Length: 145
Image (cartoon, rainbow, N blue to C red; front, top):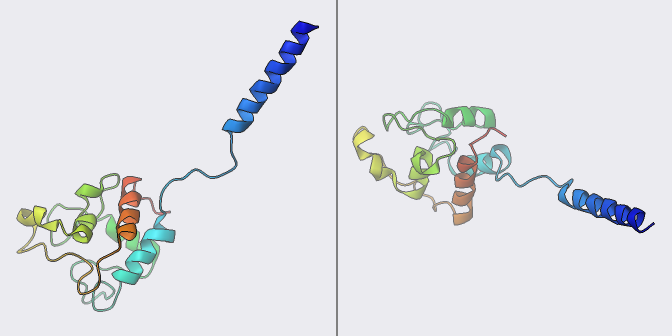
């Protein structure tokens, strides 16, 4: 009888451990492109006078479609030879992050003439939380989610 009670207690304990380790809550995976990063870029970069015009875009065209913006960010910069706008998993090697952080000068040898100014130009720089969200998205693999 004591042995049977021990088995029941052990079984209940195992079930409690199994139930407590599984969760219906989604895992935190960082900021999404469509929900977090694209709105930041659309608000701060896709202005007609900046990167929102196909004809005049200062080297990178950021259209309104999230899928098109993501595709653009996966290409190389036309002004910084060999530098990709976004290097998934590596925000420090991503030209986009360098432009946002104002560290683009480290690529001066790759830039035609100059690597330009910190972005966004003539606007307040992005907030720390906006920059952190873009950095976290790149670090998490820069998925088109």
